[in-house]
Length: 462
Image 1 (cartoon, rainbow, N blue to C red):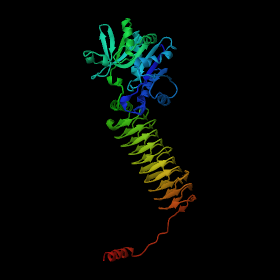
Image 2: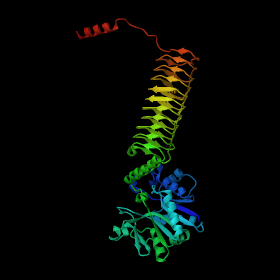
Image 3: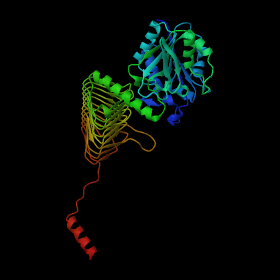
Image 4: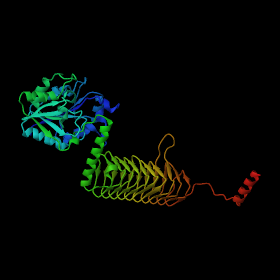
């Protein structure tokens, strides 16, 4: 198959977004919208990509990284002028095709671009325009056809009243024969109401020369949605989330309420897992088989093994072993690793700690910068005092230790295997294996305190 190079137009100011960020870096399904366009190109086996940048282009370059060729449009003079900036790089290619896409169309699928390429090649066209039939075409360029095919593309502000009634619109995506786009760009002039260089004029030139220009009609017009403001961003987000959820459901994941469940583009979920309402899965999160996630649970960049139950909790950059139970209202912070069968209960927080197989942190506890062995029980209200105001220190609790409720473990400290700590202790020294540590003030009972207190209050009243 002939080589295909792609050009992504991403130089626009995006003023209607009302944002200090470049428009194409706003996220849809946890990924910058321009990254969705790049992913679609990769799915269509197009890896040679040129990106035309303008406003805050350096920030976009930094976000996307290497692997692409960048050019800049320093004056905003239209889509044709933007593509013209890539012409010196396009001159390096001999033969083949050129896909031209907008960086703010994140819903385009790879299979759509693949079909567009195939239609273009099979029809031996000089250009093929990706079109869509939309219920409300206002703002889009209209596709004007005659008996032999496409006649021209008219922009909204240049369209006649009868042309504005046409429902078939230009999506802004094209597949050109390389030689044709090179020739067309060389002929562009700003002869329109806006004084801009329209890329659609290249189509006009080809038609005037009786060159073959084809259209490829989208099955789902929403796929061509461009993002110009926050309302459209939210609409694209909703569409993309439903697409992602449908993919997971077809692969064996149960989603009880798709309207309140949000799953990022790069999240992986294994079969027979159930997502309850209010679940948010983001980043590079991986969920194993037969898990129960939610309700009201957010998991970011975390790895969850099979058979886990996570309820009303937040996990950030955590690793969870098989058959763990987390929540409700647990918080696993970065660096947390739970081995198999660990229980982290309500209002418990774990940070930068390794928790061994079968250990339990049932509730109201904080474990930070710690190594906890197997089958350890940490009682309610226990905290590791890991920070001295300057440095963080480590707590080590060995296998089968029992930590009584409301214990303070002042790090650095080691609790030996099978050791016990009495409830309410503040422990500052190492505890040997099998020992019992009690570090609290001695209890003192004052007899008849209740009666004396009542009499004292009566005297004050008098």
